[in-house]
Amino acid sequence: MQLLVSVRDVDEADAAIAGNADIIDVKEPSRGSLGMAPLESIAAIVSRCCQQRQAPRCSAALGELHEWIGNPELLHTQAQGFAIPGLNFLKVGLSTARQIPDWEAKWLDFRRHFPGSVHWVAVAYADADRAGSPSIEEILEAAAATGCRVLLLDTFVKDTTTLFNWVSPEQLLKLRQRCTVLGLRLALAGRLGLPHLPLLQGIAPDLLAVRGAVCDGSDRSKTVCQTMVQSLRMAMP
Image (cartoon, rainbow, N blue to C red; front, top):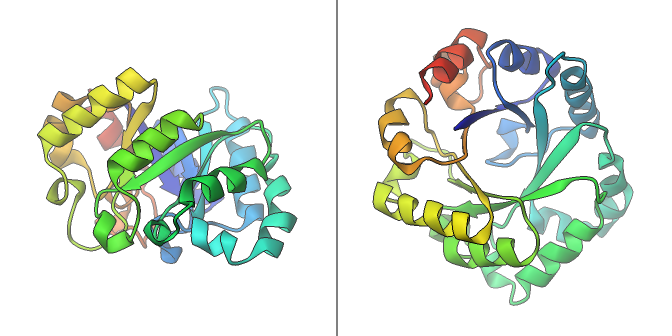
C-alpha cells in the first residue's frame, strides 16, 4: 500500500516528502473534496518534487466536471497549461453528473483537452446521493472502458463521516477484486487514517489517500505535518 498526501503549497509538499509520502497530490481543500489549486502552485509543487533524489509521483485535482463544462473558455485557456514535466495523474469529480444523460461522453471529451502525457484517475463518491454523482459501479465500468489507470473512492461532503460510514469493508473488498480484474489500481480516501489501517490491511488497496489525517489537529484546512505523515507511513503495511 502506498501513501498519497494532498498538499496545497510547496511548504506542505516539503513536509509530505520529508515524511516519505509516495505520491504528492495537489489540491486546494477550501474549494471542496477535489478543489483545484492555482496552476502556478501545481507547477511549483511538481517542480519541487522533481528536484528530489527519489522524486515522488505527482497528481493534481481539477475540481468538478460541471465547473469546466459551464466555463468552456477556462477549459480552452488552461488545459494545455497542465503539460508540466513530472505531473503524472489528473482527476476531476463527477458531482451532479447523474443529471447529465451523456456524462461519460462529456467526461471523456473534457479529458481530451489535456496533455496526453498524463494518466487519469476516475473518482467515485461513496456518498453518491449527496454528490448527485453516478454510482460507484457506473464509474468503475466507465473508468475501465476509457483508459483510466486508477479508481479513487472518496467522500464528497467533508463532514464527520468517513468512507466506512458509506461502504462496508466487504463492499470494498469486492471493489478491490473488481479493480484487479479490470486492470485498475484502487485508491481509498474519505477521512481515513491510523485507526483504519487494520481494516485497510484486509482490503489491500493500492493507495491510501489522505489530507486531514496528516494535518495539524487532524483538520484538513490546516497545515500538513511532517511527523504525522511519517508516523502514518511507518504504520502502513
